Image (tube, rainbow, N blue to C red; front, side, top):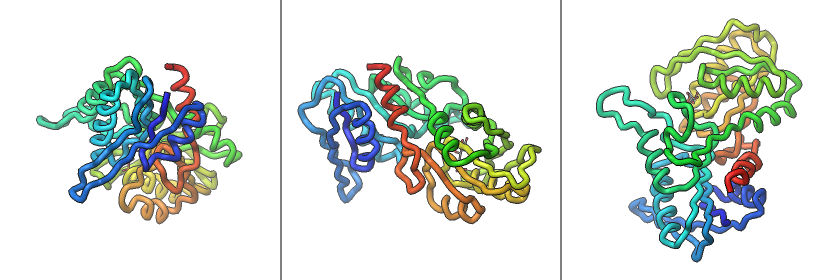
Length: 291
Ligand code: R5P
């Protein structure tokens, strides 16, 4: 077995290779002036190849993944595993108007055609119950970072109230709270546009208590910003954030910091200055279970 590392995902791929005691090799990527991607794999390759790369900034990365997977097959690879801790294009999961491309289904089918196994972490599956409904292969494996986040939070804080900003987040917040014995509550959120969310806090007493807002991802940061402002107004103590996927697009961080959030912790699913919770053990254990 060998793990292929893209240049932007070297450290995570290296950590995974170390955990699995597997060889690591580089995929060479070059971007031509017109932004086409040149991709070169090491050759020859063994029968089982694992490609490890999150699919944030997905449009380029999906093309590079297609080039990489197709070339691996041409080189004779029999088993191809994708480890994409962040899996993009999972959010558009139904046609809310005629003609809307249901990207979750389309990209899912594409990945199913390329890979024997797909492993990801906390994917955005709100209208389906399992990842194989989006990626129709036997080993479509959805892991959760809740356990890693719980262990991390327990080391940082003696006590805090966990706040889930919307009903979808309850699955992670409740798991973490149960594991470390913290209280939790869930806000009500309505998204009115890419950068416009409305939120109502639950009636819990936040007065002077440390709060950790827990979510699967921070994209524009507006969800976290709104939650933090409401918590401040409700008299909360220190406000922290723990997210699985730190996308932090555009001006997200400026908004979040202006809202008075003290600390942001995230996993290394995406490289970011706040990435301090490594997923290598979680991913390696899941791979060991299927090979
Ligand atoms: C929504 O369902 C997700 O769980 C996140 O709350 C959302 O994607 C965060 O997006 P943003 O940072 O743009 O508010």
